[in-house]
Length: 243
Image 1 (cartoon, helix red, strand yellow):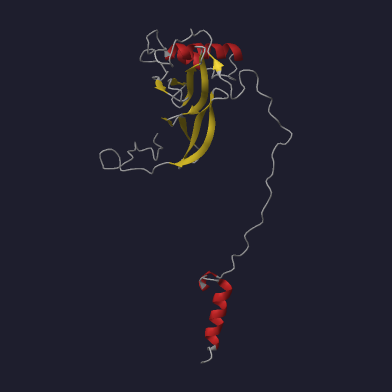
Image 2: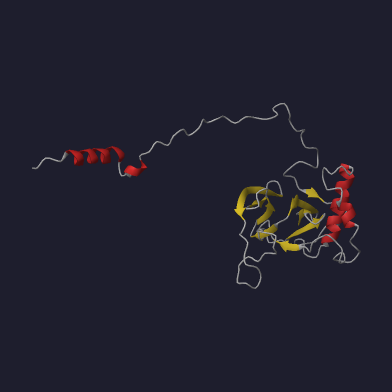
């Protein structure tokens, strides 16, 4: 058998030592930096425990609303429920904003006695959707506090016929989506390329909608605009996450 040339033997040895790695990949990665342990800020500061009514994971019965024969929230006046809920919250927190935005009563004052509150009412049209999986529809609505901030509110009928709030969220509502027993809230972040998506699901043990997942979703890039064949029309203000 002919002897293996010296340069071929060197290459074979290098192949064995490196597996299938490309010779070009055998480079020094250099200094990867020093790994630092996380630094805890303000160790001496701790928040006070939540007061009654601020406890998370607790359904809040709305006072002043007659018991509902059911099933579900169909036929219940959404504006009356929001009014009663806000009035009770303001009385409880003394207008400090702990439970409800202080502007909420002023905004509700714009609503008339009409069923839908009239054209200037900042309460959004109610949406009925079964979020609990029991075949009974919940009431989903929102109170717009200004041109940006809103208070998302979800109500259900308990087994005893009382109306209870099972979710309240003070947020910039970039979008709200429902699917089966999920309610997703889309909010802008400090990075215009991403939107935060909070997914709430029904928790039968607490009787509330609890946060189950928080993710980031990419915003679509600016499109060519309406009528130009683009999938994401824009108004000239840059990218915007669609609900």
